Image (cartoon, rainbow, N blue to C red; front, side):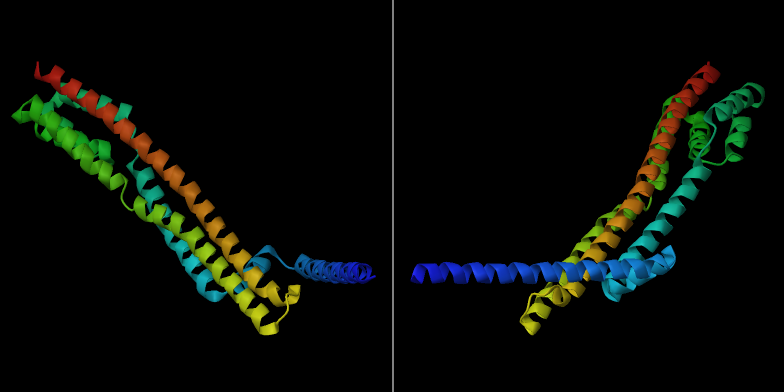
Length: 250
């Protein structure tokens, strides 16, 4: 009999617990549906602003600063790299014509009047032409390294913001979960209403951190591919310049 009563008591407690959990889930679903219906009448900008405020001003503000600084670096690099792009075939043809008609000084004038790292490398090589082909080639190689450093300037900061944004989001997640457990300890209950705020903050900071990292990663990959393309053009153009100087010296 005692065993039977024990089993019935445990079954009753399990049934009550399942009913309570079902009610809690239903309440949470209804609350989420009400929030969704409220969001339906808002624009995307208003919803984004609301979610940003709900995520907490401290960590969300830091994530926003990382996005702004990262975009500033990315836009500056994109503008610089687009201005540094040169039609190397046209430049080589112009240098060759200048060497044939006016000599080294005319070729230096063409390189001086042309923008971009390739033209700068050509000018350094032509400027050392009087010292011999070997010195001209060394100048081209050395100044090519300098121009490569200028092309890759500030890219490390962009990768820093890419790594920093999700880490800040995860830190906000941890702090949000700590707040949820503090609310549980204060209320002495594990109802969804008690932990919803902390969990919501945790999820929002994570989402915004990942979104910032994804946006900056797209810009980073574009910038790296652009740098690689310019560097390849620089190397090919440098080889062509050395060949031109050798032919002109003969």
